[in-house]
Length: 178
Image (cartoon, rainbow, N blue to C red; front, side, top):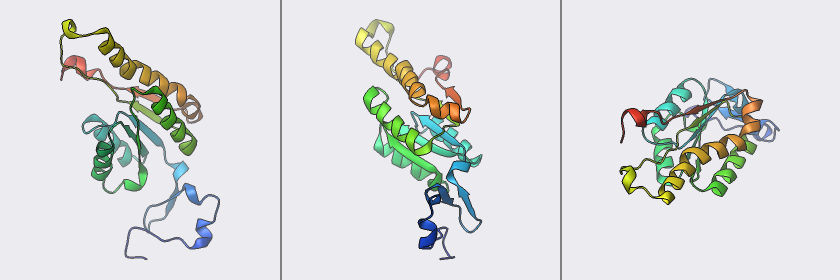
């Protein structure tokens, strides 16, 4: 079907052991999925997360997005028109360590390497310290710190395999609070 962006491979290609690693890039040829660098964004959102995803997609990366909100993930993927074959979404709440670890282990097995990990999850609250409770601060710490630790520890081998880098956002909140 030469009139579309998708090429239907003959069954012989689909039976090839490397087929799962090949991604269709139209009539220009085929690239192997493992030849593309992989970026994982934990805490993907409509502002910084989507901007970073677009930039890395333009640079030839495949991008994995994790968000706790399914409709947010659908919206993010929809807005990345033209790159959908290179965008993968996973739903996980960073505050739920068991759920996060399960999703990260699934990603680890599927992708084997992570070249760039961008930890963008943060719990932003609009109240004074006088209104904070111990439980609120523990919840914030769980997202802002424990989630990062869980992510890095779970993906340690994937990051080492690719000599990957870890980027952490959040400094802008200190300059321009929400």
